[in-house]
Image (cartoon, rainbow, N blue to C red; front, top):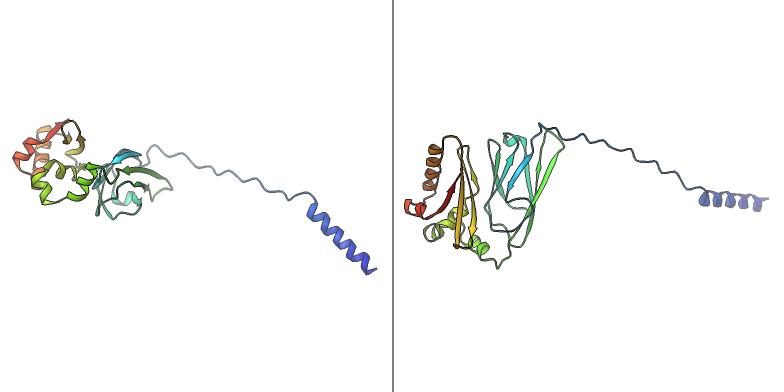
Amino acid sequence: MLFLIIGSIILVSSKNSKGTPPVIPTPTPVNIPPLSSNAIQVTETDPVNKAAEVAAIQTLSLIFNKNISPADVIFSIQPIVPFTTTADANKLLVTFSSRISPGTTYTYMINYPQTSYSQTFSFTTGKADDPVYNDNASQQNTDWSKKNEPDLYLYNQVPYDTSDFSVKGAFNSSANHFAFTVTLNGDKNQSKQNFLDWLKSLGITDQQIQNFEIQYQ
């Protein structure tokens, strides 16, 4: 009798293990509402998203679809680089406190505390043997570069944005120097004067300014 009971238990157990597999419930889709057209979001970056062969930039510029305050956005970057941020109207300027590394892809994220929305961007720096990168890395913000390579010195200060003007730089390989584009806002004459005053506040002389390749728009 005991043998029959044990056999029955084994038989029942065998049926349970080889029977119909358990039913896995179908996941319930999560409906994520579309981003409101009024929500704050980045519309432009400098360097552009996924840019390659980027020089040893000191600053990163982000433009939003509306004016922002420091409490509206949270900036983070990997690999980690110390930085500070400055918000001015619809622009966020990220200034790196230490030199970024060559041949590295940096990914940065913009989080919006008031929503669950975030945006991710990236850029990749040039290789260590890139002459433009090496110049920036070794001479960034030095008195030597200000005196001997003023275009390089200025390049390390941009992009720079205010409510009156914005400045961007790029290397002109045919002329073998850095060139700059200045966008003037509001009163053109006053904005241009404010830009020139900013250059002089950096310790750049009138003669050096005259030698710069600058395009105003």
